[in-house]
Image (cartoon, rainbow, N blue to C red):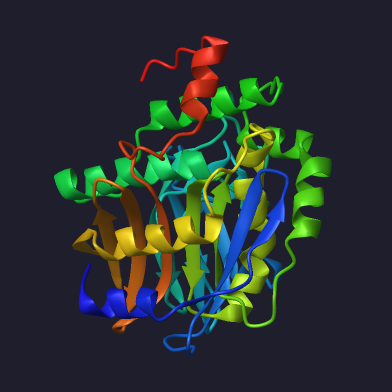
Length: 328
């Protein structure tokens, strides 16, 4: 990781840990807000300055067209889901759209059983993909960027993860939609959200289930984080619901600090973003992640345990007990 990113992560402050059932969240704060101002996806759609459509009449599963008709930048966060059009999609990487622009963005399908238009444009589904699926998608997108220079996921693996999630949560979705799983768990997810209020000046979270880190998101603007906080809490809470009885035998705050140190030690690769700035990719034996850098300022960073990390998948033993075979 280069000195700029090391400085941003080293300079963050961890707030008092919050806990509910098996989920623990560490609020994150940065020293100062720098870099470009921007609207979030939900703000831009609510004010009708952003439109998201299929790519042409026929559509393209791994791509969508976004038009920013406003005078402000718009941030699209890795893992945010868009609903409607021919099938729901999730964003493959964080992108900052410049004002008055049209951009083709890389996405993955999160609704396996539908390819028929229900609307001309997409809407915000209110969901960020669950953290463990984001982790796997991040690793595959990073691999594709290194191999072919495109932010592509393994679409079959994305569908497999959603099918496994639905099975674990007892949801039978007619079109295999990830959003249906979140909808079924809405009451429980709202209980988690109530236990984890967004704090003044908060810029991100580091989430642990039991004693294992499951995700980390940090944004440059506290106002943007406040808009995204409910989505990000539900993203990690959905995974926590799958293993409510997981106990913690290691101090979570110590595990959180160790994870950030592991992240700082990652190797870094840099690629042009499809929007403004540079798409950074991080990889080590313990951490995988990405960040968006604009005008030498980090705008968003997402980090997860690496797929081969010894704490990467606490669900593995659970799947083995259930006899699950996912074809991985």
